[in-house]
Length: 394
Image (cartoon, rainbow, N blue to C red; front, side, top):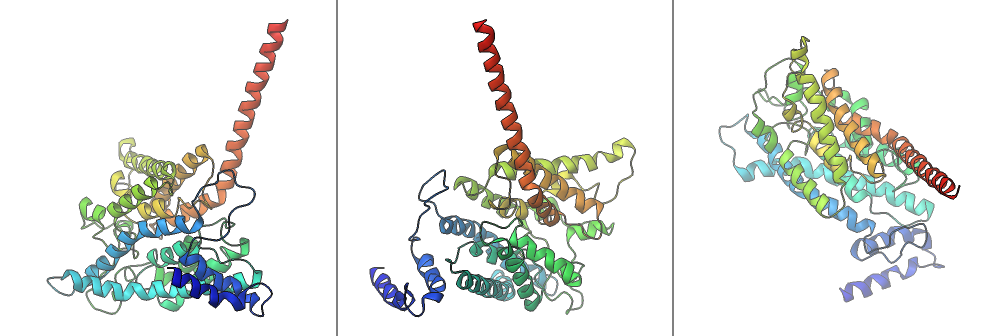
């Protein structure tokens, strides 16, 4: 490592302050930051100082995503091959899926990091590590059949409009990955919804169907999968959203490393379960339901992108609520609205994206009222103490 350190220092000399290539130093320093501990520390405005830095946090989230990503590569190939041949070999399925997903990841990182480097050079600041997670999340929440050029444009929109327009990493009010998906959904709706986008080559090969469970329910048709298939993730869907069990393992890892907020995750599950139970109770009240309202509440928790969104995007520390009580409210409403949207909007039977983006917007408001309530409570307690002292003195 010392040899690499010496070579890197020598390579950086023309980019040092006062040298002719100083303007491009942020791009070169990004390599240094990627390989080694950042050489700068917080000087002001920090309430807690420790060894944790942005790179460590981002890499921890990437590690939590790797099992989900590897499974999604296998499941992508499996969902396609099982419909065109009687038996599916594990490595054959994994290879087919990897060939579809890896180009999406490469495009996401190449385009996104290119923009990040350009803005760092233009603004003269260091390249932040925030895109390490965003660059992986964006392809993981897209349909596998999305053309790469559409993915690239979605990344451009997410990084420039959803992030850099607000000042870069740590300043965005919306989750950048979900911003990319929202852009793709409204800009290219035929590639983001329907029955042919969730299984690779479904539109090109006769007899291959790619309808998701929520899409099937929205059409009023019976579901062919059981709860265990849903929980394990052996179903069609966006690239990496299907496996609830791996999302659960990722959640435990993020909670154990204190990177993800367990309050947001737990309250979101409670909110989704509450909304599901309300819909399940409609027939008892004499209200005729449909396939989505009659779908068991516990199955709502393990299908679609709910589990993936709760674990990896609702807990985004930048766009989520910051106060402890605010996290409970924020998470509960995400789960509550996710199930509500998927039931009330048959044209879009997946509500977690819209629910998280909606609550991203309201997170500062939630925190504001939580803080104001704390201030009022403390002032009331202070005034009561003063009155008590006055009464005692009298």
